[in-house]
Length: 379
Ligand SMILES: Cc1cc2nc3c(=O)[nH]c(=O)nc-3n(C[C@H](O)[C@H](O)[C@H](O)COP(=O)(O)OP(=O)(O)OC[C@H]3O[C@@H](n4cnc5c(N)ncnc54)[C@H](O)[C@@H]3O)c2cc1C
Image (cartoon, rainbow, N blue to C red; front, side, top):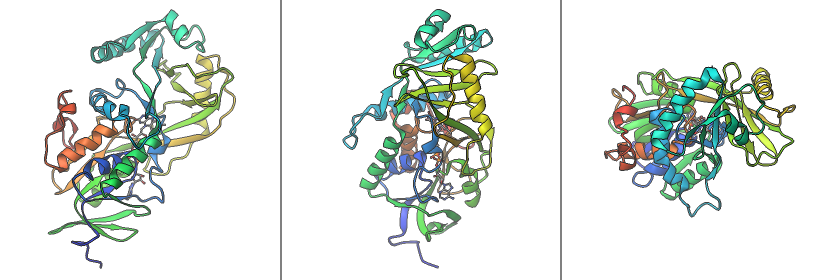
């Protein structure tokens, strides 16, 4: 057995998972610590991170995610030297509903307007101006959020990776973690690419989070990976100036987002529990999304370009789990990012870095009222 308790294969921090969570932690922590990032696949971001709808929205994920999103916005808006285009491209979001959804949409608008005066309730007439593709008769109320944006996910992932590497972080692909043992010199992490040693292990394994936790001897969180499929479909009209439309209409759930080249990104917005796996689309979810979109609009979608499925992984209370395990030394959870893992990733990395450095949460989070207690695994 190779000795990894010191030498070039020993690191301050081993991060498990090369999705957005793992690279955002590596970026923030590599400024002060030696870091190795371990990814089971041959490429990073192979799973949920490369399968999102790529939207940034601050008032959709519940109070904890919303605050993480607000705290992430300055990083996402910053003109990073490494980038040749902005990460965010303004894209208003329009939640729509019928009379059955009126009271919940009114409550959502009131809640969001307390944080941003720009978010507002929209009456029926204006709905059709904002979203001219809607068929009359199905929707009567909406919530309009002009502060939402389209987010360049792969550019953001690359940016975190470049910053992590320039801080000295090493990346090991095809390095599936299969064994975690803790001893007097810290962790020995057994991977399919050989062992590494580390003082601290960060679990950023997405849908596999509970499996990795169990390997370390930690009590599972009770994470549930949920399938969600998205696909592209061409439209005849030019969608460039359309908002991101999200239907809350009972029995007609769906969303669609304008993309380049006259395409829409569409989804049924379903949540179907799954084992951790390389999820693949099912025809029925795509067909139901097309049916709902064609019912609510005059788009007359007929064909599918590409389709993909990702696992949005939730803790039982649907809030993220960021913090030290309470019974296993040197083991940190960065899991349960659900449907907001990309838009909240900059602040998530800062949370991990503060905990690892033994510092308080940054003011960007505490000023919004967020505490370690809101985030930790045994809250
Ligand atoms: C259809 C859809 C739409 C979405 N839209 C949005 C959106 O608009 N905005 C937003 O913010 N979020 C969105 N999300 C959610 C977002 O994609 C996730 O929250 C985020 O990608 C989770 O990132 P992650 O790094 O935790 O997981 P992943 O990207 O899955 O990364 C986890 C990594 O850990 C690796 N791993 C697991 N076990 C091991 C092991 N034992 N050893 C080594 N490596 C291991 C995996 O291979 C994987 O690469 C959407 C998701 C879906 C499916």
